[in-house]
Image (cartoon, rainbow, N blue to C red; front, side, top):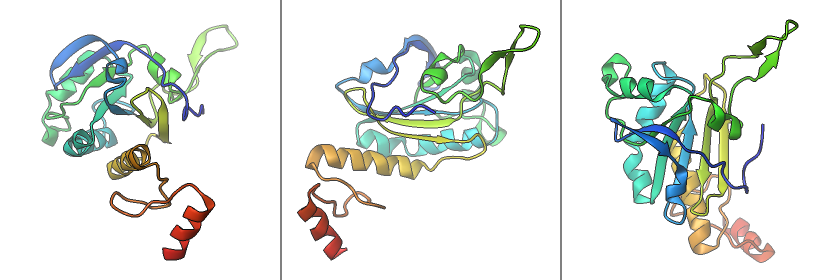
Length: 210
């Protein structure tokens, strides 16, 4: 698994569904450079079980991300038509109707591969035939990308394990606190709590009072 933290996020252009209904070509995160932080999250499949709980959870928290000037973007290896169809299906029927943030169609699996969250790989068998070592879908990867396009946080869950959207908000708060105050954030830090100066004296003072 590649560690992308501290590196430029892989660039891409792909089809996506935006605003819950409009299919666009050449969607790219480059539009946010210099403007917004980005939470890019991958999920395995449309029309499944754990995935809609995550997509609805990100939608419910969207005002929290927007208040922090953070763009939320989803991505799976399904095509744009599958995304669109799922978006038209009501929540009580297993759909994701009401989700408004962009959902990228990584149909060629190149985005998942470049972010190193693709489950499996292609190999040649003994008959020189191309085979897949596993079902070629994305793990539950999540990346926090700053305004310069640099990955500052990544998390990858196995397929059955849903993520905590509140933790994604917390890590955004930690990064923005660092950027605004120059203070580092200790274990279990939440917005509004004391942080610390990244010096021996600053750490000692924090530990002495907590």
